[in-house]
Length: 78
Image (tube, rainbow, N blue to C red; front, side, top):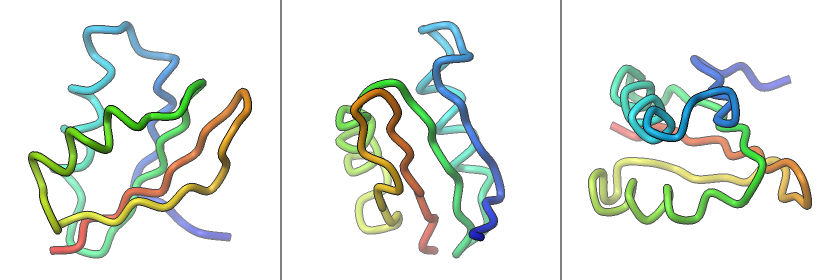
């Protein structure tokens, strides 16, 4: 079983805190640590935001791809 430094269950947060919480959690990771994002839809817009803010400094791996639950392992590379 993979261990994650943090797990963010996105549907549990109010809309105005979702991305803020995810980015704060990512920023708190040490290099090579991962977080798990659990969401009720494909978080593609989040990936575009991560790419613009942390280009080349993160890994993105789908653990589960729907239809009702999406899990993404996001790793801080450096």
